[in-house]
Image (cartoon, rainbow, N blue to C red; front, side):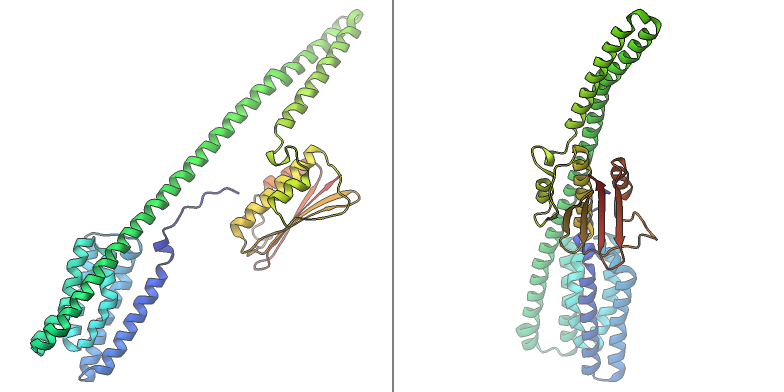
Length: 375
């Protein structure tokens, strides 16, 4: 029920949005290049070079971007992309619109200072190509250079900002992992301490008391003249131990049942609890079993279901029935009877009081947990 699930970086889980963005940019630029090329041969050659960048992204770059790796592999990827980008722009200047994908990628595979240099090189390619082919200084310095500066500036601002946000996100995720591990360790130590305390209490009270009862019965058998006195003392000792056992059980009562009825405790877990039949008090043992079963089932609802669960408690003539229904994805009990549920522990607890537990579930049809106890 409390299996630890590693936290995954939001960057990794949502990287498909980047894939979609790069795909849209790539397809759009390729279509634009084919439509604006001076000749079909130049258009197809430029589009093919852009396709080479896409292939490098799929085979090499994507993994480094998704896993947030930096280093020489990032340089190698961008060097290959640059080798394809330069001739693509030389063939068709419209290929420079690929900068909408390439500039963000610079900051996804390189540290900020190197990413700025790479962005300048990619952006400067179009400027250099125009200077070499056209040479019109008025257009070059009046339009292209200012536009290139804007692209580099915006890419630098958003790229460094994104790197900082992702770094902070990873730090928070690591902190959450450490806190979860610390809580699990504290809980484990707490359970060990509680077990040791209970073991000590049982040894100091019940075990010693039962030993006294055995000794008194043996004394009664060996000394018939004083048998009645020995048996009377054994009976008093047994009663004292029964009181001690009841006190230990009472100490284990869940906090939700401390001073509350079962209905009140369940309503604190699920405010929409539906109660039917004449409400009557149950034994502490039955209250604990039903409450623990509800807690277990609702924990699974929070982990797996897409919406709130419905909880009902029915007081029948001879049976009390707890039902928890959730709208989750469900599962096939025949194939995986305990998948996603702590059913063995729940069944064992219910069986101890002579009750029964059933689970009805189908893939895509939610899950219903029903506990019946005689009362």
